[in-house]
Amino acid sequence: MEIIKIIGIALIALIIIILLKQYKPEFAIYVSLITGVLILLLIMEQLTGIIGLLQDLATKASVNSTFIALLLKITGIAILAEFAVSICKDSGESAIASKIEIGSKIVIIAMSIPIISSLLEIILKILPQ
Image (cartoon, rainbow, N blue to C red):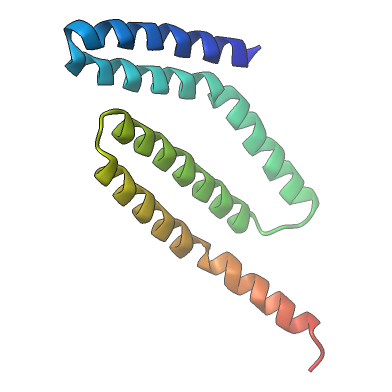
């Protein structure tokens, strides 16, 4: 199971970080960053499977593939932003973390405008005039 590997890596990293903070606190952030990357690499296989499944479903349902690609990009931005926010908060930079959150939300809203406008067009076609 992947979750056991993820928890194992996280707990080992936690122990290393606790030990490092006593002697070399500046290295603790590096361990945290490396741990995050390792966990992301562990879940990449499952992520590619999910993406493939969504693309198959979109093809079967005749959904515009542009919208699926856009949704996947938005999801990727949200995941990467959350990762960056966590790293910033771990290093004590909550001000930078909040700026990343705001920036990522604005980017996500901007990217979702084509989907929202398409949905509004469909709703307007369905409603009686």
